[in-house]
Length: 302
Image 1 (cartoon, one colour):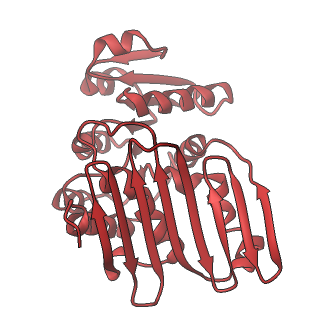
Image 2 (cartoon, rainbow, N blue to C red):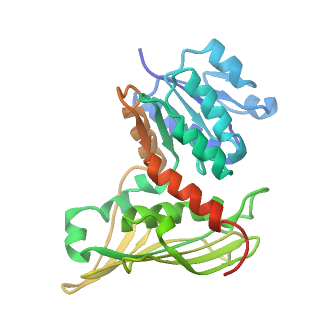
Image 3 (cartoon, rainbow, N blue to C red):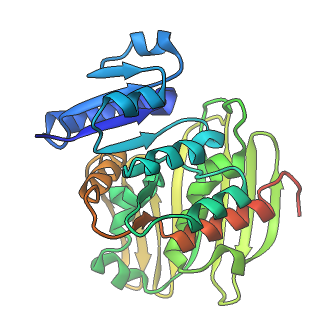
Protein backbone atom coordinates (compact mmCIF):
# COMPACT_ATOMS: atom_id res chain seq x y z
CA UNK A 1 0.00 0.00 0.00
CA UNK A 2 1.15 3.53 -0.82
CA UNK A 3 0.62 6.78 1.03
CA UNK A 4 -2.59 8.82 0.98
CA UNK A 5 -2.01 12.53 1.55
CA UNK A 6 -4.67 15.12 2.29
CA UNK A 7 -4.25 18.64 0.95
CA UNK A 8 -6.35 21.29 2.68
CA UNK A 9 -6.66 24.47 0.62
CA UNK A 10 -6.30 24.76 -3.12
CA UNK A 11 -5.73 28.44 -3.78
CA UNK A 12 -2.74 29.80 -5.70
CA UNK A 13 -0.10 28.18 -3.50
CA UNK A 14 -2.25 25.15 -2.72
CA UNK A 15 -2.38 24.43 -6.47
CA UNK A 16 1.45 24.49 -6.49
CA UNK A 17 1.46 21.94 -3.66
CA UNK A 18 -0.98 19.82 -5.64
CA UNK A 19 1.36 19.80 -8.63
CA UNK A 20 4.25 18.77 -6.40
CA UNK A 21 2.18 15.93 -4.95
CA UNK A 22 1.16 14.80 -8.41
CA UNK A 23 4.85 14.76 -9.30
CA UNK A 24 5.47 12.53 -6.28
CA UNK A 25 2.74 10.12 -7.37
CA UNK A 26 4.63 9.55 -10.63
CA UNK A 27 7.81 8.70 -8.69
CA UNK A 28 5.99 6.33 -6.33
CA UNK A 29 6.41 8.43 -3.18
CA UNK A 30 2.64 8.97 -2.89
CA UNK A 31 -0.26 6.78 -4.06
CA UNK A 32 -3.35 8.95 -3.54
CA UNK A 33 -3.89 12.70 -3.17
CA UNK A 34 -7.21 13.93 -1.77
CA UNK A 35 -8.09 17.62 -1.63
CA UNK A 36 -10.31 19.75 0.59
CA UNK A 37 -11.43 23.30 -0.18
CA UNK A 38 -14.53 25.24 0.79
CA UNK A 39 -14.95 26.36 -2.84
CA UNK A 40 -16.78 23.56 -4.67
CA UNK A 41 -16.32 25.27 -8.04
CA UNK A 42 -12.56 25.28 -7.52
CA UNK A 43 -12.60 21.58 -6.64
CA UNK A 44 -14.52 20.80 -9.83
CA UNK A 45 -11.59 22.17 -11.87
CA UNK A 46 -8.80 20.10 -10.32
CA UNK A 47 -7.64 16.53 -10.71
CA UNK A 48 -7.44 14.56 -7.47
CA UNK A 49 -8.32 11.09 -6.23
CA UNK A 50 -11.13 12.56 -4.11
CA UNK A 51 -12.36 16.02 -3.15
CA UNK A 52 -14.16 17.39 -0.09
CA UNK A 53 -15.60 20.74 0.93
CA UNK A 54 -15.19 19.88 4.62
CA UNK A 55 -12.02 18.87 6.44
CA UNK A 56 -14.16 16.90 8.87
CA UNK A 57 -15.60 14.88 6.00
CA UNK A 58 -12.13 14.19 4.65
CA UNK A 59 -10.99 12.94 8.06
CA UNK A 60 -14.11 10.79 8.38
CA UNK A 61 -13.95 9.13 4.96
CA UNK A 62 -10.22 8.86 4.27
CA UNK A 63 -7.42 6.87 5.87
CA UNK A 64 -4.77 9.56 5.65
CA UNK A 65 -1.05 9.18 6.23
CA UNK A 66 -0.40 12.92 6.43
CA UNK A 67 -2.02 16.31 5.90
CA UNK A 68 -0.84 19.56 4.31
CA UNK A 69 -2.54 22.80 5.39
CA UNK A 70 -2.29 25.49 2.72
CA UNK A 71 -5.04 27.87 3.83
CA UNK A 72 -5.08 31.50 5.07
CA UNK A 73 -2.68 31.93 8.05
CA UNK A 74 -5.46 32.68 10.55
CA UNK A 75 -6.81 29.14 10.02
CA UNK A 76 -3.50 27.26 10.30
CA UNK A 77 -3.47 26.46 14.01
CA UNK A 78 -7.10 25.33 14.28
CA UNK A 79 -6.75 23.01 11.30
CA UNK A 80 -3.40 21.71 12.55
CA UNK A 81 -4.91 20.98 15.96
CA UNK A 82 -7.72 19.04 14.29
CA UNK A 83 -5.28 16.99 12.25
CA UNK A 84 -3.00 16.31 15.22
CA UNK A 85 -6.04 15.23 17.27
CA UNK A 86 -6.36 12.44 14.68
CA UNK A 87 -2.65 11.56 15.20
CA UNK A 88 -1.75 12.78 11.71
CA UNK A 89 1.60 14.25 10.69
CA UNK A 90 1.11 17.84 9.53
CA UNK A 91 2.84 20.04 6.98
CA UNK A 92 1.54 23.59 7.46
CA UNK A 93 2.40 26.65 5.42
CA UNK A 94 4.13 29.62 6.99
CA UNK A 95 3.52 31.58 9.04
CA UNK A 96 2.34 29.06 11.61
CA UNK A 97 0.04 31.63 13.22
CA UNK A 98 -0.75 35.33 13.00
CA UNK A 99 -1.00 35.70 16.79
CA UNK A 100 2.02 35.17 19.06
CA UNK A 101 -0.04 33.90 22.00
CA UNK A 102 -1.82 31.37 19.78
CA UNK A 103 1.50 30.18 18.31
CA UNK A 104 3.08 29.78 21.75
CA UNK A 105 0.10 27.92 23.18
CA UNK A 106 0.05 25.58 20.18
CA UNK A 107 3.79 24.88 20.16
CA UNK A 108 3.92 24.24 23.92
CA UNK A 109 1.01 21.79 23.63
CA UNK A 110 2.65 19.48 21.09
CA UNK A 111 2.81 15.82 22.08
CA UNK A 112 5.98 13.74 22.20
CA UNK A 113 5.18 11.96 18.92
CA UNK A 114 4.05 15.03 16.96
CA UNK A 115 5.29 15.42 13.39
CA UNK A 116 4.99 19.06 12.34
CA UNK A 117 6.80 20.65 9.39
CA UNK A 118 6.30 24.37 8.73
CA UNK A 119 6.71 25.38 5.10
CA UNK A 120 9.99 27.26 5.05
CA UNK A 121 10.67 26.12 1.52
CA UNK A 122 14.07 27.81 1.18
CA UNK A 123 15.49 25.46 3.82
CA UNK A 124 15.12 22.80 1.12
CA UNK A 125 16.43 24.82 -1.85
CA UNK A 126 19.33 23.05 -3.55
CA UNK A 127 21.36 26.23 -4.00
CA UNK A 128 20.98 27.31 -0.38
CA UNK A 129 21.91 23.81 0.74
CA UNK A 130 25.20 24.33 -1.12
CA UNK A 131 26.08 27.00 1.44
CA UNK A 132 26.40 24.18 3.97
CA UNK A 133 28.64 22.04 1.77
CA UNK A 134 32.23 21.64 3.07
CA UNK A 135 33.61 23.14 -0.15
CA UNK A 136 31.77 26.45 0.18
CA UNK A 137 32.07 26.63 3.97
CA UNK A 138 35.85 26.32 3.60
CA UNK A 139 35.85 29.20 1.11
CA UNK A 140 33.58 31.48 3.14
CA UNK A 141 34.54 30.65 6.70
CA UNK A 142 32.11 31.48 9.48
CA UNK A 143 29.09 33.34 8.08
CA UNK A 144 28.92 36.78 9.68
CA UNK A 145 26.21 38.57 7.69
CA UNK A 146 23.17 37.61 5.65
CA UNK A 147 21.26 39.91 3.28
CA UNK A 148 18.07 38.70 1.60
CA UNK A 149 16.26 40.33 -1.33
CA UNK A 150 12.91 39.16 -2.63
CA UNK A 151 10.92 41.36 -5.00
CA UNK A 152 8.03 40.05 -7.05
CA UNK A 153 5.97 41.58 -9.84
CA UNK A 154 2.86 40.00 -8.32
CA UNK A 155 0.41 42.27 -6.56
CA UNK A 156 0.07 41.92 -2.81
CA UNK A 157 -2.56 39.29 -1.93
CA UNK A 158 -5.51 40.48 0.12
CA UNK A 159 -4.62 40.42 3.82
CA UNK A 160 -0.90 39.80 3.24
CA UNK A 161 1.81 41.87 4.94
CA UNK A 162 5.35 42.37 3.60
CA UNK A 163 7.14 41.22 6.75
CA UNK A 164 4.90 38.38 7.95
CA UNK A 165 4.25 37.03 4.44
CA UNK A 166 7.42 37.69 2.41
CA UNK A 167 9.90 38.55 5.16
CA UNK A 168 9.42 35.38 7.22
CA UNK A 169 11.61 33.44 4.79
CA UNK A 170 14.37 36.00 5.33
CA UNK A 171 13.97 35.87 9.10
CA UNK A 172 14.21 32.08 9.07
CA UNK A 173 17.35 32.11 6.91
CA UNK A 174 19.00 34.84 8.96
CA UNK A 175 18.47 32.96 12.23
CA UNK A 176 19.47 29.62 10.67
CA UNK A 177 22.57 30.69 8.76
CA UNK A 178 23.90 32.95 11.52
CA UNK A 179 22.92 30.61 14.35
CA UNK A 180 21.38 33.52 16.25
CA UNK A 181 18.01 33.91 18.04
CA UNK A 182 16.14 36.72 16.31
CA UNK A 183 15.05 38.20 19.63
CA UNK A 184 18.67 38.66 20.67
CA UNK A 185 19.18 41.08 17.78
CA UNK A 186 18.64 44.82 17.75
CA UNK A 187 16.50 46.29 14.95
CA UNK A 188 18.72 49.16 13.83
CA UNK A 189 16.63 50.09 10.82
CA UNK A 190 13.13 49.31 9.67
CA UNK A 191 10.86 50.86 7.05
CA UNK A 192 7.63 49.55 5.58
CA UNK A 193 4.88 50.45 3.17
CA UNK A 194 1.82 48.43 2.25
CA UNK A 195 3.89 46.56 -0.36
CA UNK A 196 7.48 46.75 0.88
CA UNK A 197 9.67 46.21 3.92
CA UNK A 198 13.33 46.79 4.70
CA UNK A 199 14.84 45.63 8.01
CA UNK A 200 18.39 45.58 9.41
CA UNK A 201 19.36 43.54 12.47
CA UNK A 202 22.54 43.69 14.55
CA UNK A 203 23.33 40.91 17.02
CA UNK A 204 25.46 41.20 20.20
CA UNK A 205 27.96 38.77 18.61
CA UNK A 206 28.60 41.25 15.78
CA UNK A 207 26.62 39.21 13.25
CA UNK A 208 24.32 41.17 10.93
CA UNK A 209 21.14 40.27 9.09
CA UNK A 210 18.95 42.30 6.75
CA UNK A 211 16.23 41.91 4.17
CA UNK A 212 14.33 43.83 1.52
CA UNK A 213 11.03 42.48 0.22
CA UNK A 214 8.39 43.92 -2.10
CA UNK A 215 5.30 43.20 -4.14
CA UNK A 216 4.44 45.01 -7.40
CA UNK A 217 8.14 45.34 -8.26
CA UNK A 218 9.41 46.08 -11.76
CA UNK A 219 11.14 42.71 -11.96
CA UNK A 220 11.52 39.44 -10.09
CA UNK A 221 14.51 39.28 -7.76
CA UNK A 222 15.52 36.37 -5.53
CA UNK A 223 18.96 37.00 -4.02
CA UNK A 224 20.80 35.89 -0.92
CA UNK A 225 24.14 37.55 -0.11
CA UNK A 226 26.30 36.12 2.67
CA UNK A 227 29.64 37.32 3.98
CA UNK A 228 31.99 35.08 5.89
CA UNK A 229 35.29 35.48 7.67
CA UNK A 230 37.15 34.40 4.53
CA UNK A 231 34.90 35.35 1.62
CA UNK A 232 31.47 36.24 0.36
CA UNK A 233 28.83 34.66 -1.86
CA UNK A 234 25.80 35.86 -3.79
CA UNK A 235 23.18 33.26 -4.57
CA UNK A 236 20.29 33.67 -6.99
CA UNK A 237 17.68 31.22 -5.73
CA UNK A 238 15.65 31.83 -8.86
CA UNK A 239 18.33 30.56 -11.26
CA UNK A 240 20.61 28.63 -8.90
CA UNK A 241 23.63 30.78 -9.85
CA UNK A 242 26.26 31.21 -7.14
CA UNK A 243 29.13 33.75 -7.26
CA UNK A 244 31.88 33.38 -4.67
CA UNK A 245 34.74 35.75 -3.93
CA UNK A 246 37.45 34.63 -1.52
CA UNK A 247 41.20 34.76 -0.99
CA UNK A 248 41.41 32.10 -3.70
CA UNK A 249 39.82 34.42 -6.27
CA UNK A 250 36.37 34.50 -7.81
CA UNK A 251 34.36 31.53 -8.97
CA UNK A 252 30.87 31.22 -10.43
CA UNK A 253 28.78 28.13 -11.02
CA UNK A 254 25.17 27.07 -11.39
CA UNK A 255 23.86 24.66 -8.81
CA UNK A 256 21.14 22.22 -9.77
CA UNK A 257 18.70 20.02 -7.95
CA UNK A 258 15.08 19.09 -7.44
CA UNK A 259 12.37 21.72 -7.01
CA UNK A 260 12.48 23.01 -3.43
CA UNK A 261 8.83 22.22 -2.75
CA UNK A 262 9.33 18.62 -3.88
CA UNK A 263 12.32 18.38 -1.54
CA UNK A 264 10.22 19.83 1.27
CA UNK A 265 7.61 17.16 0.63
CA UNK A 266 10.24 14.43 0.60
CA UNK A 267 11.49 15.69 3.95
CA UNK A 268 7.95 15.52 5.32
CA UNK A 269 7.27 12.08 3.88
CA UNK A 270 10.44 10.60 5.40
CA UNK A 271 9.22 11.59 8.87
CA UNK A 272 5.62 10.36 8.64
CA UNK A 273 6.33 7.37 10.84
CA UNK A 274 8.72 9.08 13.25
CA UNK A 275 8.67 7.42 16.67
CA UNK A 276 9.51 10.67 18.45
CA UNK A 277 8.64 14.33 18.00
CA UNK A 278 9.84 15.94 14.79
CA UNK A 279 9.21 19.67 14.49
CA UNK A 280 10.90 21.55 11.64
CA UNK A 281 12.16 24.20 12.10
CA UNK A 282 12.62 23.50 15.79
CA UNK A 283 10.08 24.58 18.39
CA UNK A 284 12.65 27.04 19.76
CA UNK A 285 13.14 28.64 16.32
CA UNK A 286 9.41 28.90 15.72
CA UNK A 287 8.78 30.47 19.14
CA UNK A 288 11.64 32.91 18.60
CA UNK A 289 10.34 33.92 15.19
CA UNK A 290 6.78 34.34 16.44
CA UNK A 291 8.01 36.56 19.28
CA UNK A 292 10.03 38.67 16.82
CA UNK A 293 7.05 39.12 14.49
CA UNK A 294 4.90 40.11 17.47
CA UNK A 295 7.47 42.70 18.55
CA UNK A 296 8.54 44.04 15.16
CA UNK A 297 6.12 42.87 12.48
CA UNK A 298 3.95 45.97 12.50
CA UNK A 299 4.17 48.78 9.99
CA UNK A 300 5.89 51.36 12.20
CA UNK A 301 9.29 52.63 11.08
CA UNK A 302 12.18 52.79 13.54
